Structure formats: C-alpha cells, structure tokens
Image (tube, rainbow, N blue to C red):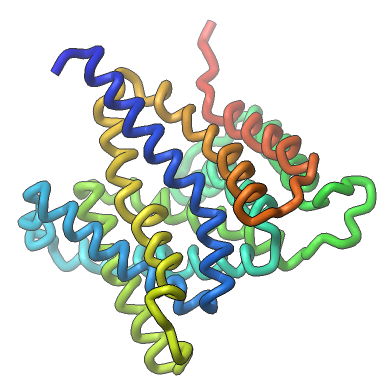
Length: 298
C-alpha cells in the first residue's frame, strides 16, 4: 500500500469513527426515553461484547485471549468494573438529568483529569501549563453548565453537572490502568466488556431491575449504542491511527465530533441550542489542546 493511499484510508476511517461517535449523545437520549439506565447499559454492553468478539475472531486473535494468564484476567475483571459498568452508569445518569448538549461536552475534560491522576498513579510531574489548561477547561464547564445564562446560573442541575464531569475521572483512571496493560488493544477491550457484561447481567437479574415488556423497538437504540459507541467504532479508530502518517494529524480530527453532535442534538432531539454550549466547548477544547501540545525546547 502506498503512503498516500494509507493516508487517505486513515482519514476515511477516522471520519467514519467521528461520525458514529457524534450520533451517540442523540442515541443516549433516545435510549433513555425507552429504557432505565442500568438495563440500557446492560443491552449496550452485551451488544458491544458480541461485536468485539467478532472483530477479535476475524483478526485471528482468539489465541491471544486463551493465552492470558490469571493476573491479566484479574486486571480485565477490575477494568470491566470501571468500564463499562461504573463509567457508563454515571455518564447516562448525567444524560438523564441534563440536556444532551450539556452532558456531552462536560465529559470531554478527561484529558485534563488524566494529567492530574498521572501524578499519584504514574509518578509524573505536572507542568505549569496543566494548571492553565485546567482553569480554561473548567471555565468552559461553568459556561456550558449555565445553559444560556452564565451570569445567573440558578437553574443548573448540580447533580447532573457533577455526574457528567465526574464520569471523566473514571474514564481517565480507566485510560491510565489500560495503558499499563501491554496486551493487544482489541483483546483487552473485549475482555473488559465481557466481565462488565457479566456484572451487569448479574445485577439486573438479582436486583430485579429488568423492566417488563422490553421489545426490539425499545431495545434498538441501546443496541445502536453498543455497536457505535462501544464496539465497531473503536476498531475504525484504531485502524485510522495505524494507517496515519502521524497520529497527531488524525487525533485532532476528534474535535469535530462535539460540534457534529450539537447539530444532531438540535435537529433530531429539537433541543434549543444555547449560545453558551459552543462557547464553553471551545474553551474546553482549547484547554485540552494546551495540555496535549508539546512545548518546543529552545
């Protein structure tokens, strides 16, 4: 494959992944109108597990699953508790309480949180720019949370805001623990979701949280979430990074996603678009870019 062809394919895979991810906030809201949070996460997680199993098997990596030792399986069991179980339950609870256009960007601060968690977990030092990035991003969080009235944010759902931003802590923690594990990415993700699905099925079974009368129509949005938020989109994104000439060029495309999400939320869910949402989103993205941009040495 020529370099130009690989580069074009990389952008194609990346744009497809971003397009699918941008539909997820709308899918979350539609799903929540049909199912409670825990059954929704359970259906989505089981769907994702099946998709990831097919991807792992089609790539001839099933032997990598069988070769995992006890410590690696215990690691997957722990990570499956964090994601999908805790992370998605918290995130979807936030979506239940907030407009989609508010919940989605608040979750985007995880790269900033990641840096501060890296101090105790990875023994890394914090650069001065990280505090600037944190301040800018949290200014964006405040503006988005105000829902159109930054000088009088009395109607803000504080619990929803705390859940949406708190979910980024769990995702950042999951990210750090995941990068410590040097196994194949698709194998790790499959095993994490396999354990997470077992936990979720056990929980809804023994707590009797499974609602009566679920039909394919009511489950379809949750299945969609499982395929395009948790499943096949991950594979598309990995392919994009593998084929990219430099990962930075492709990775920066991910910031198109939130703006596409806002358009879909507005036109499909008919949420009135607050002017504070894109303004705050730009601040959050600016903070993330300040954090992730390497400082040139003189």
